[in-house]
Image 1 (cartoon, rainbow, N blue to C red):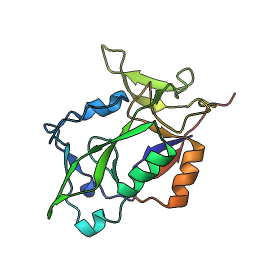
Image 2: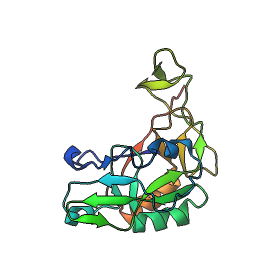
Image 3: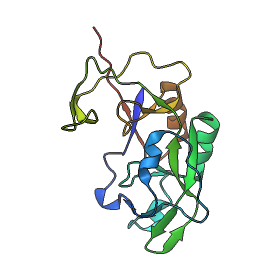
Amino acid sequence: MYRWTIPEQYANKYIGEYQYESFDYLLFSHSKPIERVENINPVIIYTMPDEMINKYDCLPNSSLIPVVNERLKDFLETHAKGNVAFHKIDLQTNNGLKDGFYLLNTLTKLPLIDMQHSHYQYIPGTTALMGFEQVFFIEEPPEDFCIARCAEYSSYLMLSDSLVKKMKKEKFKGISYSKVPVHRG
């Protein structure tokens, strides 16, 4: 199993700035379909040159919800059918609006973290996880799993070994695949 992450070599200054007043990004962490509101799209501002934007299939942004282009969208619609939906965005650059970009809405949420062996902290006064000192994942995810948010920590977007193999073959740019640790013994 892998975690979808931002490539280490991606420059922080080029991470898109989600305009939080434009659309509630937290809706995407619930792993449920989001009703489309006519003429209202999430707005994300990128300062990188358009030529660079065109080189990426996935663009990181401050909401931690992946922004994908048509190529990656089409791939996921084929290989993760029923587990993903896409929401058109207004991607603003120095040269104006760019078409053909979407926020990835992962419709599946699964318990994939081995909480018994992981070391974590709660947000004080709540039962919500603040973060992990050490995290382990379950050894055997469900057989039909291909892409899902972790039920325990929705910031984690998880991918199956078979989906990552197909994605690597396509050489998508702007995504890193982090193999996750499992507790053995």
